[in-house]
Length: 89
Image (cartoon, rainbow, N blue to C red):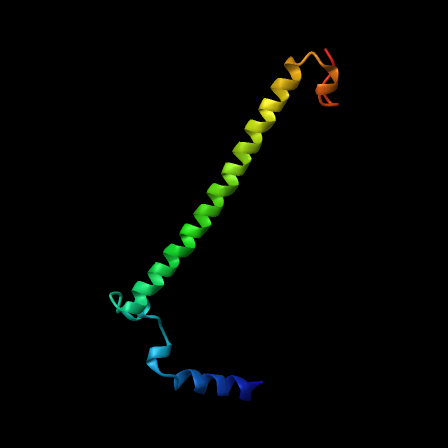
């Protein structure tokens, strides 16, 4: 185990400096790599927000549709139109 840890330590010490950090962390925040990384983050955030909006819209649609169905069932004179959980008038 000590041999493995020693080997990993030597490998870590002799790695090139460019492999130790990305362009933003390394200090070149205006490089094309940093710009591409920022655009990638933005695309992922836009995708997540669009999914949230889609789910929210679905739930609002279902709530409105359900409210219209319950209102129609309560005002209907036909007992067969009411759901089973509503008492018949």
